[in-house]
Image (cartoon, rainbow, N blue to C red; front, side):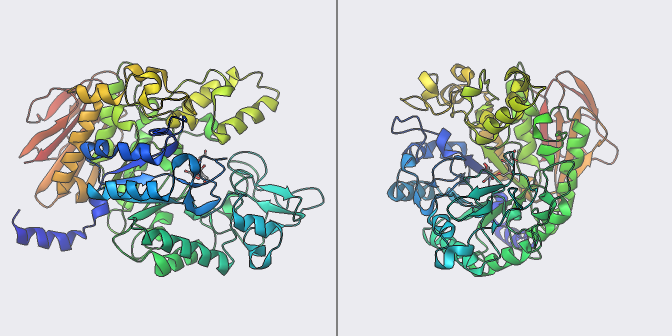
Length: 567
Ligand code: TEU
């Protein structure tokens, strides 16, 4: 492409660095421990910046590192402007930022403003009705001895807790140590905006915005309909003022278009998402939607299990089409709240490596920004939790406790499968760096045990092995950087009803791509559908040895993935 062409395309394509980027998510508690206390830290991350650079990622999303009593691993913030002791201090943070920026890796911080910790000064003052802080949170009188309404917390039980100091109940959509901020109060909003500005002035490149579509609650906090799902959700998911607040936030502090802003938005559909994303929405770069990671739930997440590829394809292509023109997608199959993708959507046994590569091929060749969760590039798998004492996640611990109170659950063994399938600790076991004790994550005792497979699945081994998942990810990331069609090309699903094959084309002017993925543990036959031209297509990447040129029909081995591109 000559420079003029690039320029023309640039304007036409509405380019942005964050559309072309691959983002790597770091869960600091589990990434790398430099101090030997068993907890990951900022210095530990800094030591691995070259690792990230070698992998080729463009940005890091750092989960919360702020001061926090850690009731929910840092999603309960007690001071937005300082660093949690076990992670280091602001000097360590600045060194990390510099180390990343020196390698052209951007840094996205986690913005948790639906709630704070109950140990935050704002809450401490609010519960004492101290001046302007009195209405910083959502306080109500109860109904006799009962909570003000029937809303349920995402982590189980009522969403209300009675506070003896104030003599009123406060709302917490998550743990009782995470009281919800009162966004109706303009002082709250201004305090949040000041904090955002302060972080931007430190030189960061954007925010991942925790449960940002929950910040507005229905006026009068009416009872929720009881039945399926979380009671009350219809009164706080995409609440009445959410767009007003986000627009205001955008105009006040987030209007710089070079920022990456990704809103975490549980419960949104494509139409809702359009209102959050892009210039005609609230100006967010993209959202994390949940449809493709909740479609296997029954009444709640702990019933998750069966899923079908046809349905997964339907959901993914609906999002691909829905945000194709006036929005942008985030692409992820796992994160710190979801089980490991290879255990959920692939095969973590014999086909672990093949299926990890297959899923990586999917996330790096869809239309949207891929998010790689730490360890995904090794094909890390779900863990085993033989006893509830091994669990650390507040959600899992509460679930086990509540389940054991029910008559049909006799022991932990009755719920163990659910924990090991969908529990959040699966994703939070320490990053596996080597076959040294505790996977080289710490010299001390890790806060959460390592997955026992670390002797075989680790960075050192993966980097030394030519055909490892790690090297394949590196190639995928390079491929995406080299081919505009993989970033900006339109997406067309092929064979929507095929139960085993996920296939699609990408098209950008004369540039074309064909992606064919076999989600079965056995061989399947693929026939190129009518209307899809194979002219000029050549193999760009595959997870097994295959000929350079595609035939009109070919057999795919178990979990085989192929990407063909015009050269
Ligand atoms: O998660 C919010 C959220 O809705 C889910 O991902 C949630 O963890 C899951 O549905 C529970 O089953 C965000 C954070 O990513 C999560 O780690 C926090 O615990 C939560 O918000 C509260 O801040």
